[in-house]
Length: 258
Image 1 (cartoon, rainbow, N blue to C red):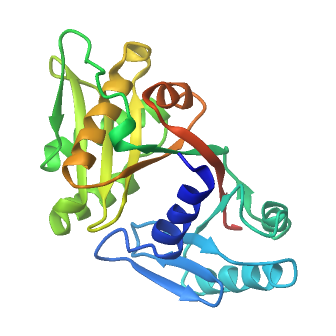
Image 2 (image 1 turned 135 degrees about the horizontal axis):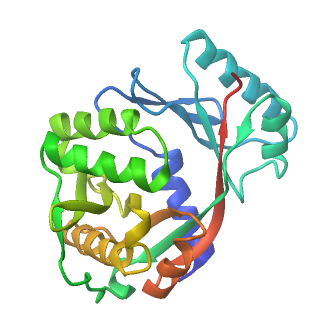
């Protein structure tokens, strides 16, 4: 894989050329910034910017002012290759709070190792109704220790209005949800995104996460996607590398001032 070429393609297609997450969202380009503005339960944030040392502080202040006027918190996603090189420091100086850094990993679907199998007694089912989404949220809350209210709203909205844009999956051991994940699909895009992959503590290390990655990769391939993208935590990166993903850069969410 030509890392620089694929990263440039990702920036152009999925960040600068981003499309709204859901029906209540809109993507706007304001000068050198691309942002998503959502309804009360959606994600608000800066997806892409083309800044330099002379323009960065003014752009940051402009986004803070915009979202504050709308009464919305937001996130500025900073990638390791974004300019200026001290963009993260500038955001921190403006009152933003950095979240843990993740690794942007991309795999070419045709070159991935997709032979992962589920442990005995575990099966994967699609989450196609409210009951299925509740299972996904239940796994999310147990795996990550966070409230799943926003995730529930986002997934139910997509299921109701854009069902073809997402495939959510739950791994069940008997009737117990032990892992969950989703693949997000943009019509005509070369990239599909893998999101929300989480496994409850007692089932980690048994290959469930790996099998869900392989399952979602096959879904993306069936939809004609060439690449898969993951914002990977340190625990996921080794698994993804063994499957054939490449680490291209880092990504750090900066949360807006309170």
